[in-house]
Length: 269
Image (cartoon, rainbow, N blue to C red; front, side, top):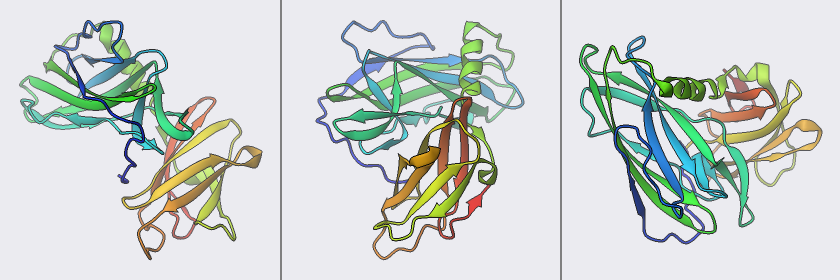
């Protein structure tokens, strides 16, 4: 994951938000956000499907894993859990939001992050202890902290939250081969290495890039429904990254996710 730029807005003291057993906290009217951790049911093909749901106050932003020109991505800690072998937090495609003249990538209103949890011992319950640090930004950015606990059992019954978890998983970007999604063309004479990324099908609405550590990739709309991808920051005297750049492209029918190689302008699966 690339290095992100720090918040460009003053940060007051953190405001903790404590939760228990997946139920939303009883937040007051001045709270910027509340978090719930919910289960999708029992063990399915060796994993539990859950979701972290963030409800935001009006005009408040929280960030994607690449926050853009400013901001802070969420951090998830499950280290205090019992019988947990691994976890994976996925994120829906963000929106491009202008804050103080900067492009940031994140969410307004509400966002659900699907979490896949695998147990050490499949026959025993998992006690998933979540600690989450994230930012909630309006005119200022407030660093937030949430804690929640879920007990997950192999024969756990479906509940009203099961549909919420299923919807969160369905909203994730669909993995695809880059060659089927876009073409890349280097921009000659650009002051920074740049490419025109042209979607192969109409209906693309935005493009977000995640460059390797040490690099910062910027994306902007270009004529004819295309996008301009530029490496605006790179290590001193470094060649183009050999590690693929991950791209998330939003479209009228959903988001796509794929990776491209920039050292030869080649798309990769």
